Length: 338
Length: 162
Image 1: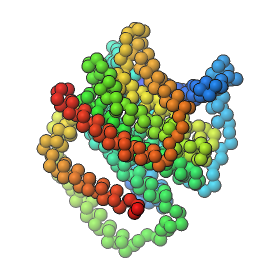
Image 2: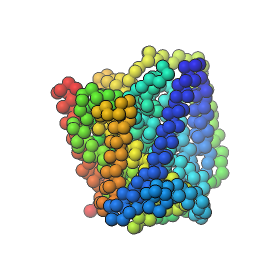
Image 3: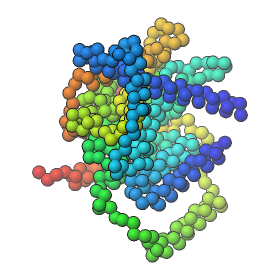
Image 4: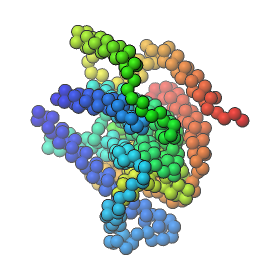
């Protein structure tokens, strides 16, 4: 029983840490995004609340929580509230398969800094990425509004198309690593001494596009389309209920998918030992935030695709490219005996 | 410890299946169905069949149910068939069949022998892949050809005439 109790406590601590970090990060990324957007548009961004506007997320949170709760007439109440859970839960579950560093020992127990080290980790990423589609469809449907529903249908078509491309793009990396476990993929890169982005540049570009599309970022943000659909499926949500949907889609999803991109293509926690035992975590976070920065940078720089083009690009260009990439990788792996 | 996990998941599964056939709103019904699919995936996971659990979520919970959801949510409310009371004639025919099947399955569970697991398989993704591409290559290819034909047919049917 002692063994079981210890592993239970360790698992609970891991979950608490990951949840706290993910939600805190999500809140502070709003500040980061607004600051960055401000500087891209030659403004200053938030400056009033606290030094450098650092308390802005707290002020926003208080504002959202104290707002009057308005539910549209004819809304399906249980589904209306359930949709928020269905949007946030998959985004948080994505964090459960991210390995933040190598195994270490504390008080005689060896601990892996990952919540669930399963051998189908990449499948879980696909599964959670596509489960997020229900949050969007049902939030649009339950709010009994045409604009919201158009937004959710657009998002559904985008997620279905890009989830397929994502799966095929990542297969190349799985072939090279020979495993679906995220820890295994990082270890394979450490063993070979090379990041998989050098073997799989096409896969990385496809993955990046899929990541942008799934998290509703420009240039694939047709489901939000502020100018036509006034943020799409979340338009009928108010207060913190509204806050939860972009938190899940724009921030948690982007961070989680960036972290998985780092695992797949940038060698995870690998990097020179400059901070002693903390350097793996340092490198992992630096790489992840580099990608998050890149995504937000794109968001405030590029224009948006048309709704029809987004899915056409996925099915007609990206999917064949991904298939060719897999065939080429499989042949190369077979010849080199990798 | 195992029976607590199994019991919880089984109750979850039975409740959601019951909900799926008892609620009147079609969207609530599909939500219960989705819940039952997720419960099945959790059952697979608790039995150590990780690959099947993952595929259950990706294929059933997402790829298949999402199309039901898309169709059901886009149907206008006026066109939905209203509740007409319990169908007693159909029930009187169907219930004995269900009862007999249940008794047969119950007999099998109580008296029969199940396939025994042959030791722990470490990497079931690799094992399933190997089996599919060696012992079961022919059925696998036949299935893939059928799916390809179905896909081409669906695209042809779904195209607009130009």
